[in-house]
Length: 102
Image (tube, rainbow, N blue to C red; front, side):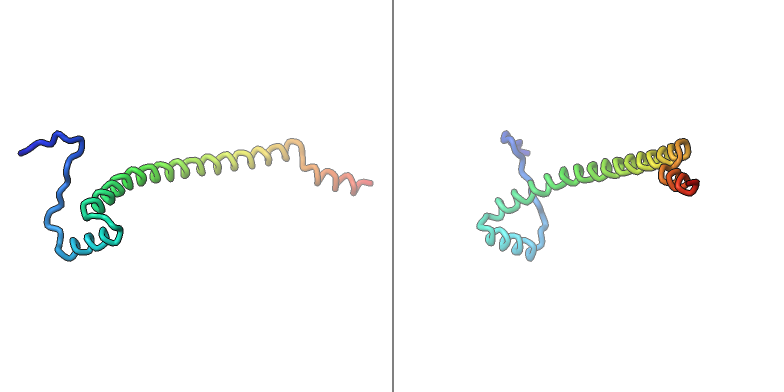
């Protein structure tokens, strides 16, 4: 087996159905490219797409965690507000009560 001294290796795809190969050649020609150039660009895009997918999954996980933290903090703040109202009373109710006494 011959080893390549080049920086890049080759990829071969065997047993591609004839009709699929024709469609790929047509798509390459429509873009003004050889089949080799067309397949090369799409292979790179496919490989990069997986990395982008991984990043998107991680971002979604982080967004979910952040949303949980925000919801938890919101509930804690609402509970604290309720406690302050109990301790110090509701200012509006106190004003209404003061008006009744007059």
